Length: 193
Image (cartoon, rainbow, N blue to C red; front, top):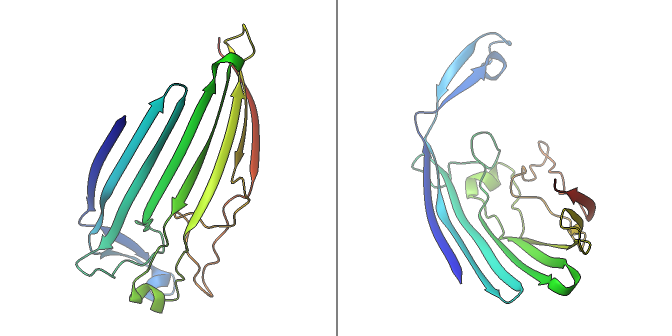
């Protein structure tokens, strides 16, 4: 067994935003510095892996919370300096077939529903639902040629439509989020010399 745990608490203090004249109502003239509330991102990182013979299974999890100033609902999910990503989980399994010089595996990434504050919902932001994406791969090294590896991978195996947590959420009249890439097949060859 291997396992790890980490805690992070990142603060962006004494932040300054530059506002252009168009945002100030100055007819496009002038720039003003606007002091804003501090940003804070904190949470936990967990990982664990277990290997038995030629198979390894594992997980990585992130539990993150982003806030602005003292008010719990002050941060809008509009990008800029911070974007709330919530809780995510990744599970994986890898298996090696030594007799065939082959390895294959799969992974699943799950993002929990991102719940927004009343302020964000009143501003028109739409909450992002839970999603799970499955990926798979296989790779092979020809017998007697350790320098060459052929690999095929399929990302988003079930062609799930979802928005990644790093994208902007739906804001009617302002932002339409772009779906993540659908099923993608990758074929590659690597030669080590």
